Length: 340
Image (cartoon, rainbow, N blue to C red; front, side):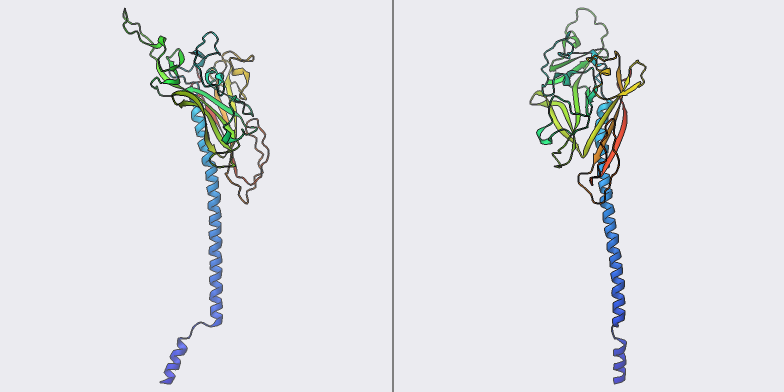
């Protein structure tokens, strides 16, 4: 009986020291491998997420500017800014007391002869960036777009609006459609066929890059000066669009011989397309807009070595290599209302 018990105990004996050490070694090796795989997966996830955020910011910012640019020179029922009357103190033959917001200057609001313009490698607007955004980014362009709302609206007192037909238009702000566009109350004779008019809001947007984001401190951001409405009056607001945009550049494709094709590209502010400038070429129109944009990550990342020499538009920004992830995007945009 004792022999049987002793034999049974020997059969139930645990692992030897050698077996235990081998098992621990294999387990440790597998655990180290699992941790390495987890670390690499985590690092790849962080990198991919950072790339995705930068790409999303670039896509959103470009889509915002593109939608505005495509509709530049849309004045409701026509696309001829010089046919819109009421451009106070610009067209001296047609003075009208509109009293537009003076923050950025009257011409910023009423210069409808230049539906797309800007400032080359400078801020250049008469109104300063909002105090919360610090100063404007150096070596970055400003893009200004002027147009009317796509859909007709109801006349609204205090809002700068355009009443337009297919051949003419007028700016007004008192909520009363100008007389020349109103139907006679009691015509004395059968009315002649008329060109119907519609009311549209006047829209002015200026895009620029500020050095400080209100949403993410320490990050440059795309901002926009926009004509809007507040407390029953037209005002200019400064709105944040997309944190992470570090530089924007613009070049304009000009048709100088009225054949609906681009003859040359110029920088914003070139006199060739400005009806009020000495170097204006009569009939010159902006047909397309090339936009470049530099977008960066919101924080520095270890292991990011960017040796690219960034040269968007006519700007030479050089090599940053400061630990931030960057992306340069560009697009050529056709102005839908530019063709004759």
